[in-house]
Length: 114
Image (cartoon, rainbow, N blue to C red; front, top):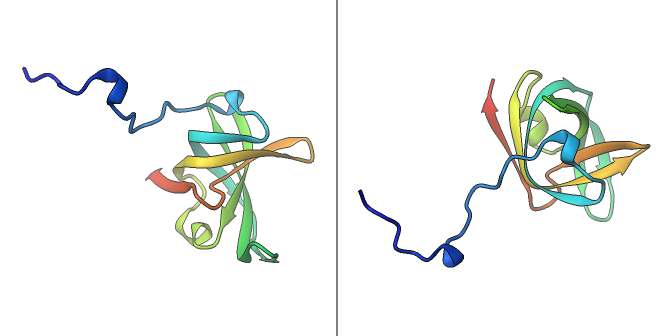
C-alpha cells in the first residue's frame, strides 16, 4: 500500500465539502453547493456596466431547503428542470428577503445528473 509522502500541511484540498442550503448566509461565497433545479423562469436581457446578455431566474432545492438561482448567458441553455447541478466558487446574496445563489464572474456551474 503506497502512502502519500506530501506533508498534510502542504497538500491542497481539491474538492470542497458540500454546503447545504440551510448553511448559506447572505453576502458569503459558496464553495460547493449541489441542487436539483425545480423551475427555470423565462430569460431576460440585462444591459449593465458589468454585463450585457441574457439572465434567467430559477429555483432549486436540496434536502434542507429552497433557494433562488441566477443563471447567466450559456448556463440558461445548458440546464433544464430536474437537473442536479453543482455551483462552485459562486456567491450567495439576499434579494427581497430571500437567498439567491449564482456562479458570479469566477464560479462554475456543472451538471451532475439529469
